Figure 1 (cartoon, helix red, strand yellow):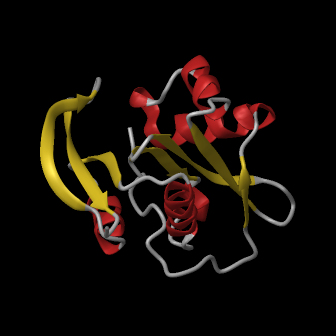
Figure 2: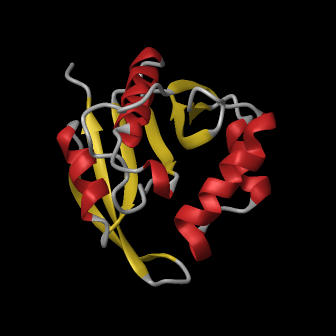
Length: 165
């Protein structure tokens, strides 16, 4: 379910100190608060998120301010040479500061470190800000999954990024 909420961090760099680190199970409450606020009816269930955050198949990140307040999170799942940007979300009051872009950049570094050659994601068709962000780092649209986001009946645009061989 990779989808930045509207205005999900298209700025060049965070305008205040932001630390990005690996998320842990102890971050689940903060992650779920952002998840529910950002995605409402299509938010992941807590146990699904817990399984993702603690999985050995990927890496979840959390962005926090100098006081340790969570501002956003992102997740990668990588198996062999294929990977998926699972999700990126930024708190509403922190959007437009480059946090989504910084989280995505760190996911791309992690994907490369793990040997991922093809990286996929789904993004809401009605979210041009996120689609533009993904395109700006080399993702291109390869298809549509009709009515993917439920219960809103919103299509998902499938995007792919390939590492040069």
